Image 1 (cartoon, rainbow, N blue to C red):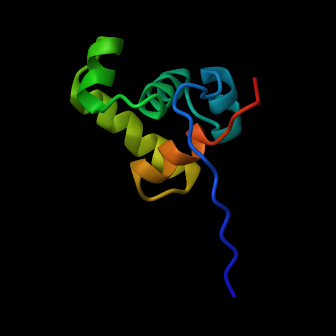
Image 2 (cartoon, rainbow, N blue to C red):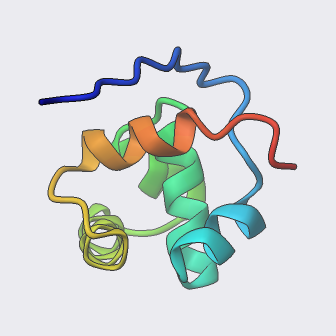
Image 3 (cartoon, rainbow, N blue to C red):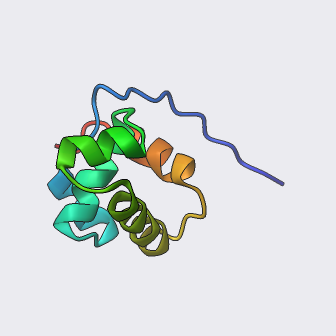
Length: 87
């Protein structure tokens, strides 16, 4: 038996970086990357906004996925984007 929950994703209303950091035990840098990705930015745009190299952002994404136990960036982004009302 399977149980599926469908949650609408609103990329305009993602939780704060601090909430994401605490929920997933992320570093502050990883949390900032997670928020920008959840807002719909890709790796290059995130790197540009944070004045980081794309490889540094990818490294943070790997850390985020390891800590969250998720295998794909899109799964993590969907999880973050669905966390409305926690601020």
